[in-house]
Image 1 (cartoon, helix red, strand yellow):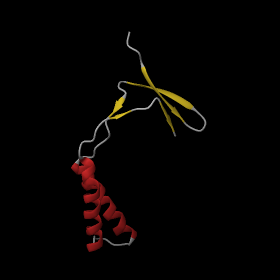
Image 2 (cartoon, helix red, strand yellow; image 1 turned 30 degrees about the vertical axis):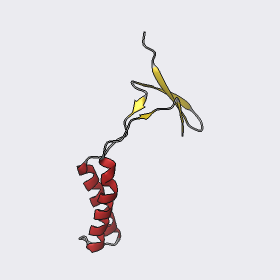
Image 3 (cartoon, one colour; image 1 turned 30 degrees about the horizontal axis):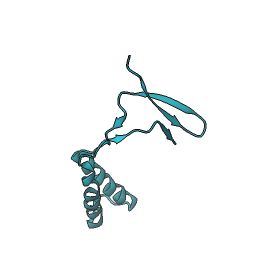
Image 4 (cartoon, helix red, strand yellow; image 1 turned 60 degrees about the vertical axis):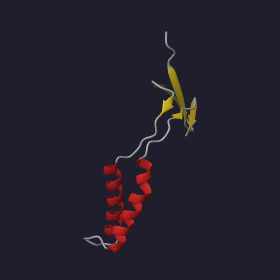
Length: 88
């Protein structure tokens, strides 16, 4: 019989146990579409905060900087080993 793998997550008041299929966790990677959407959202928030109806050069530059900052995160990363207990 296969041993069930359990991770305990502790908060200030409670401890819960979760059954997992694997002890390794592959980090989430964003697709290009998600990165582009995040960059556009950042520029749109800036535009709306300044009460404008269209992007200006600074909004566009913010979108470009956000895209450049997030795009390297789309590369594949190594899996990480999950600990027995996570404290939140």
